[in-house]
Image (cartoon, rainbow, N blue to C red; front, side, top):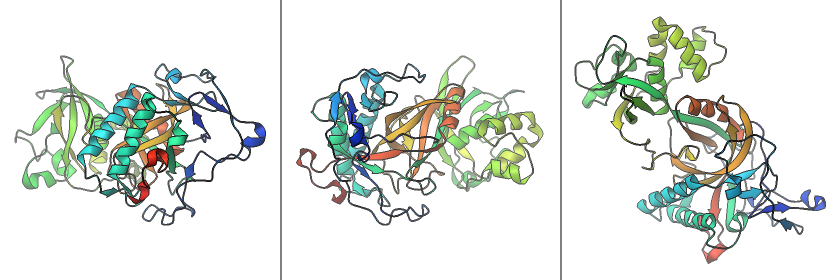
Length: 416
C-alpha cells in the first residue's frame, strides 16, 4: 500500500551547485518517459521515446558539503553516509539495508533464466541486464569504481495512469497478534493452516461457521478478529505467545475467492465512519462485535497461514527488508529491479515530517497491486509500521534504474 514531490536534478558524491542561469535549462537527470499520456493500466505505455533525455547544458560547479536539514528526521536517516542531492534536506539513504537489498536482488537474479525478458508490459528487460545493473549498483555503493550515480545509470520513469508522471504508493505491514496454542474463553478465534482438497475452497462465511473445526488445522488461537482479518489482507502476521516468543504467520494459500473491500461494503450498508482507513475500521469492528463477523465475511477470500521463524518471505523467495522491499505488478516492473524512489519520512503518529530518496527493491507482489505505476512499500511490523504504511499513501516520483549501455562497454540492455 504521495503528496508533494521533489525532482532530483543531480546526484554526486558531494552536492551539485548550478548557476541560476543554467538551472532554468537543466532537464531532470537522464530521465526517460513515454511520449504519450498514459492510458488506463490495462494498456500502459504503448509508445516509448528513446531511452535517454538530451545531455544537460551548462557547466555545473561541484562543491563538497556536509549534509544539513531544517526538517526533523529520525536517526535511521544517515545522510553522512549517502549521496547528497542538490537540496540540503534531500539525500539518498545508503545503509546496511541498501547493501542487503542489492545482494538479495543479485541472489534472486542468479536463480532465474538470464535471457528471459521480464516485465514485458513496460520494463521489457532481460534478467541478465537486471543483474548487471545490480552489480554496477554494488560497485557504486561500495565506491569500487569511479563515477557518480547519474553517470552510470539511466532512469525509467514509473508513472501511474492516475497520477501525472508519478507512481502511486501504498504501504503494507505485518500486524501483531496475541495468540495461544489452545483455545480458552478469550482466545477462541482459530487461525487455520491450508487444508487439502475441496476444503481449501470453502467460502469465508463457511470457515467462520467452523466448517474446518475438529480437523486439526488450527495453528494457533487469537482473541482479535479484526487484527486477524488485517493480517489476512496483508498476507502475514506476527504471532506472539504468552511466554513472549514470536513466530511468523506466513501466507500458506487462500480459498481462491476474489477479494472484496469491506470498506465498500460498510459504505453500502450506511455505516458512517470518520474515514474508512484500517484504524477506523478496526475501531468500529471492536466496538460492534455483533456485526464484525458479517462485515469481515463480506470479503469472500480467506487466507491460510503457517507458523515459521524469521521475517516474511517475498514472491522472489527473499526475506522482506522494512523500508526497502516493494511489491509491484511483475507484468510491468520485473522482480529483481532496483528503483530510485521519493519516500516520505513518517513519524510514529503517521505524519509526514520530510522526504528522502532511497533505493527500493522489487521483490514482492500482491493481488491488489495492478498496473505499471503501483508500488506497495513494506514498512515493518506492529502499530508503528501500520501508521507509517498509512502515511505513505499517495503519488510521488519513482524510477527504475538501468545501467547505461555506454558505461563499461556493455550492449543495449533494453534489447537483451
